[in-house]
Amino acid sequence: MLNTAHRITKSKAWVCCVTCSAKILNGDATTMAHLSTSAPIGSLFACLYLSIRRGIAGLERLIVVAQVLIGISLISFSLSRQVGLSIIILVFTGCFSILLITSSNMIIQTLVTEDKRGRVMSFYALAMVGMIPFGNLLAGTLAHNFGATNALIVCGSLNILGARWFSAQLPAVSRWIDR
Image (cartoon, rainbow, N blue to C red; front, side):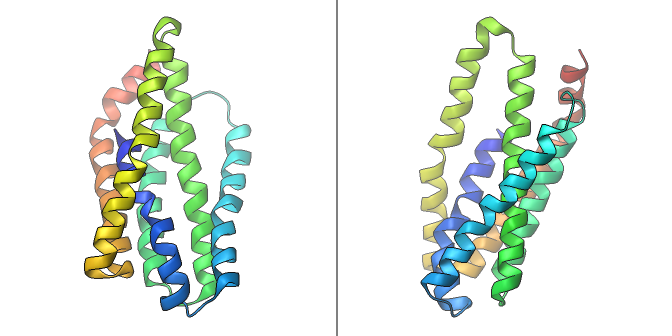
């Protein structure tokens, strides 16, 4: 559920990135290229961190922290008026996004019994990929009506609220992991 909320609210960063690049940061195609390559660099850092982890203990807390930091990163990006700062913020956004998605995936694949894993992962994939168009629609509508900056602030805030909801579920998730 948290990943679904993440996909709805996070995907809009790329929808609004063109507007931010051109209008807010007064950039051009080169600026957009730099912004577009920032998140994958952060993703690499997340992959390196996850590759040295052992087991899934503590990943449920990492999911909450990553979701909150994604929200903060989106809000920070929306308020940034400097290209260099925006690039650094997007590096962190990419890192936290991969931490969230991969941690969720690791928990699910580790804890779901083998005979149900295919079905569960199908629903997981549907929730992840199927929500992207709705996130883009939400972001586009918000950006059109209220501006790209405000759209990113709303979506970042929704990420933080989603993390707050998931943090209330942590005791149950932690018990499930400890079994």
